[in-house]
Amino acid sequence: MSPAVARQTERGEPASGALDQAAASGAGAPAAAESGPSPIEPAGAVALDLAGERLALLPAGAAWHAASRTLVVADLHLEKASSLARRGQLLPPYDSAATLARLAALVAATAPARVVALGDSFHDRGGPARLPAGERALVAGLVAGCDWVWILGNHDPEIAPGLGGRVAAALRLGGLTLRHAPIPGAAPGEVAGHLHPVARVAGHGRAVRRRCFAADAGRLVLPAFGSLAGGLNVLDAAFSALLAPAEMRAVVIGRTRLYPVAAARLVPG
Image (cartoon, rainbow, N blue to C red; front, side):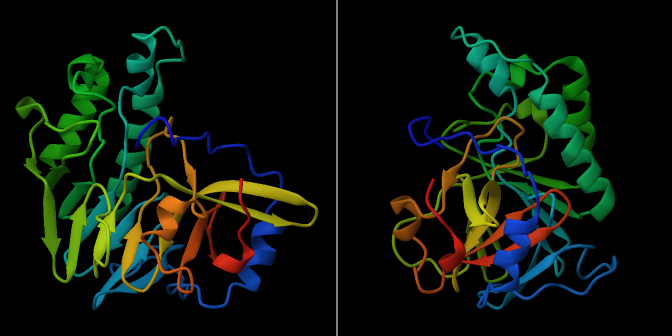
C-alpha cells in the first residue's frame, strides 16, 4: 500500500454498541458461519461465497478456503518499524514479533495445508535481512510446516530465496485468483490485499474505526494483517472503482468477533 493513502487504523474500540447496531441492520451482508470449531468453518467465522468457492472470513483478519485447507493473509509488512527507523522515524521494534506471534497462533489453530501471503509480506526489500534471529526462526518454522506461497507485492517485488516456500505473482485456487493488488475492472473471484481496508461505523453517539474485509458479489479485499499497517476507508474512491456500490459490504473486525455491516451503515473518516 502506498504511504500516501495509508492512515492509522487502530483508534481503539470504546464499546461494541455501534458495531452491534450496524450489524443487526446490515441487510445484504454475508451470512454467519455455523458456530463451533470444525474443519469446514473455524469458530467465529463469517461465510462468503465467491465465484463458486466458499471462504470463511476469520476474526484474526485472514481468509480460510476449507476445500483446499488454505489460509490466506495479506500485507504482513514485517520489519516496518526497522524500515522507518532507517529514515529517522523511531518506533518500538517489535512489530514483526507481534505479527508473527498472531500468525503462528492462527496457523496452529487452523492447521493449514497451504498458507498464501498476499504480498507486502515485508515492508521493503531489505526486510528479510533485518529480521532478528528469533523472528527468522519463527518464519522458517512456519514455512517448513506447509506449502507456503509468497505472492509478490509492491513493497517486496522479490523474496529472498533463503526464506523457503515458493514465490508467485498470483495463484489460482479453484475459481479464485489470489494476487496482491486488485486489478482494474471486473475480476470475478479475485482475492487481494494492498488497500488495507478499514470501516468507520457510527452509532450510540460514537464512531468506531476498525480493520475490515471489503467485498461485493465478485471480489474480496483482505485487511492488512501486519501490526503496524495503516488503513484506507472502504468509502474511498479506490474501493468504489473496484467494488459495486450497491453490493459492497464490510465485515468489520471487532475485539472478539466479526460484524457484517452493509455499506449504508458506514461513514467516511
